[in-house]
Image (cartoon, rainbow, N blue to C red):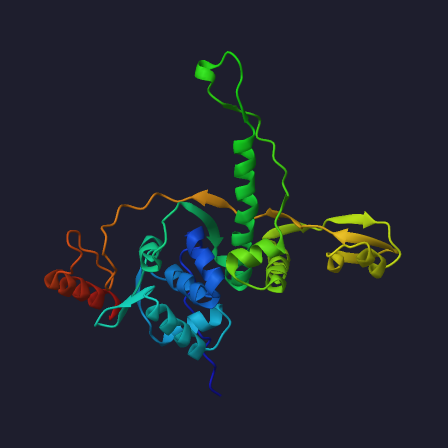
Length: 295
């Protein structure tokens, strides 16, 4: 009787990434979740370059819980978007996050979110929670700026910040999320629920008591927000904006180096100067890639 040989999969070698928030916001706006999920998995099993052989294909399908054909489709979309390059020798090059700023033509600001490899199973929840959490965190920054005061007797009247005591929860409306990311309000609400279920967000509902007997009475009073009236425990309440607290870790990335105008990534080589590629350099680099990955 033949014994079945257990399939071997490529486990992630890197278990932590600092992903730029700007990239996550693009992914959320354009519903590019599955492709970024594959992109990060491939980064986690490689050093920037790999050959998409049968083992890699099956491993990606296993860890991302999809069919190998689905992996191929996602990979093709990544190549079309120029997030992945390919050498003639067949080696795939995974662009760096700094390069993606250039590819997507967005400003490379430093705010980023810590991604841990166990988040792969709840990847969509991670992306939307990072985006929603940042909307709350940015309010903290504005509050801090508003609380700066001038104290008599200080040098040149330099503003001295007060003690940093901020509320853990801050209001983030579904309507605001919908406007920022171009989705329906119902979708924004689902994003919040995904974040809560995955443990990336805490959300507290706000209810204000309304002294009415039914919704129709509220509407007759000339109120146009009767859709916010909810019935709970024998009383009517007006539902307010949800209070949101992020449980993800935000940090600043190292500032990317300056890039000259007109430069775009071809394969994985960026030649300083006029932005053109040297044929000798390209051939040499391809030979290195071929020897490294086509063993």
